Image (cartoon, rainbow, N blue to C red; front, top):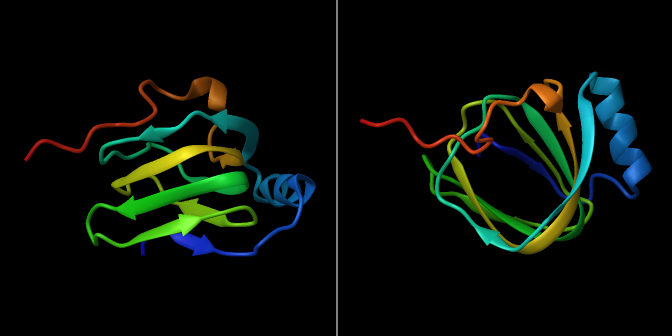
Length: 113
């Protein structure tokens, strides 16, 4: 997968925040409502640490998918097409850019061929 998944990577939210700070990324802890979304991409690099719940991620190009539970670290570079499905989860995300400057929508549609 182009998205880097590491299971059992961290134990506490403080561990996740320390790694985000070490990278020089901006941290944001979020609670996500249940969702199934279409293939999309982001215009920023990120690292996501699942705190509670499960997140299913599928890479569009390869069709590979994985289910990520608490303790999982998900690292993705800008531009990777993917989709997500979950019943709600809590995560701390490190953004490569200040979250206050994110362009909307966050989930960018795939390019038109």
